[in-house]
Image (cartoon, rainbow over all chains, first blue to last red; front, side, top):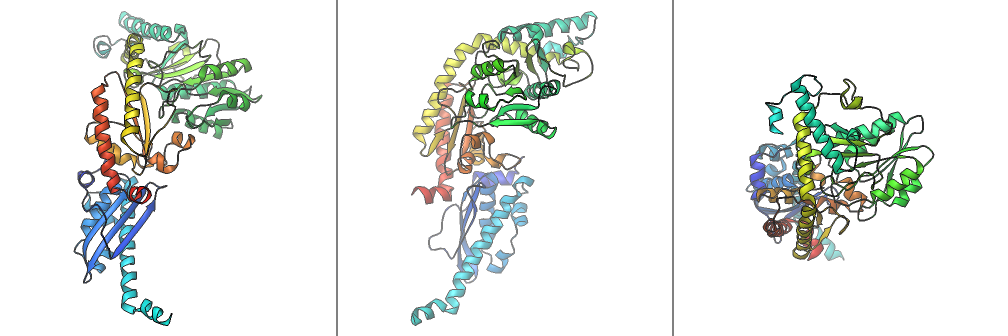
Length: 137
Length: 368
């Protein structure tokens, strides 16, 4: 098994490490038993992802895919971000060893979850349901 | 060793002078190895390495003794060369008992004794474990086997040249070792077979090695093995002393400098060249790659580096959780390791752990 130059480069110098305070969406996937955990934070303004950060416990490929997915989503609209697949993440890294493709799947899942989380939050705000419930209560 | 690749190219099975020159060289190597482990020359078979020696010993005895029984006893922490051979034999109708180990990786001889049945034909327990360095009570287990008239094999790949070995004191009937673990060449090993032990050959063909292992001899490899043993004989006592100090410095350094780290394996009943630790909240491969970038070579029991994506069976057997197995690192010390190397490793490792923990979502949640 050998990593591509781009994987190693992102592993050595991961982009966007950390958390976002008051994020607009968070996606957490994986578990310590399987060996990889990814947390992806996004900030959204006017339907565009303005910032993305991650925290990851995992192997070289897990860190590199996390780093790459944060780079790929920045300045994309929500609809564009939804179309980013694990293949796109792997391709942007110059490919992954077959046994490490699941790391790119994890990155895609983290992104989808963060976007779902964002849409969940905004739809609640838009419909105003919580506010109505509060009034009734 | 090198001249046997070029000038002295004779085949030791040939009668002419070129052949006899090579034959003489391999017999000299055989003598050196036999003396080193308290065996007779004719009890040493040269093989292609530890894996072949283990396969030959286990399958060879199993096939030869099938009329006596079909039960084999081994441990849960053996090398794959033993475990996979046993799994294969299970498919051929043999029954295998895999003895568990304690939290330090030690096999209790009483457990071996309890597992013996009327059908037990072979016991195979490693001399020391390759991952966690734990040294097993081989002499004691050998004594039990001998009392019951059961053949006893030990995989001594980790110990030849690192612990003194006397096959009579250890009560072993078969012993495997490999050249590259004592600074010798890769692709050569030995199998010690006590005189009188019934074993079918693993390789059929010519009558090399008294018909017990066909195939033209790997002359340069065998000569190199002999030389490695000769050097080990001179260096071993001094080396064990020196490495034990360095090993304990590295272990203490890691446990002192890095929070949430633990030692895997036994603190004292341990190979002098082995350090195995688990570091919580970080994953092994990412530590390994970072260490590699700093010129430090180590290995990990993390699932992420295995092709099966399963963590180490040895770490599982000593009761480690998946999480801790993922965060394991093994450092091997050697003849050329210096105190400065240990200091360098400690500094770099703690920096790397700090960096990876800052990135780890587990560290944040469970510690702060």
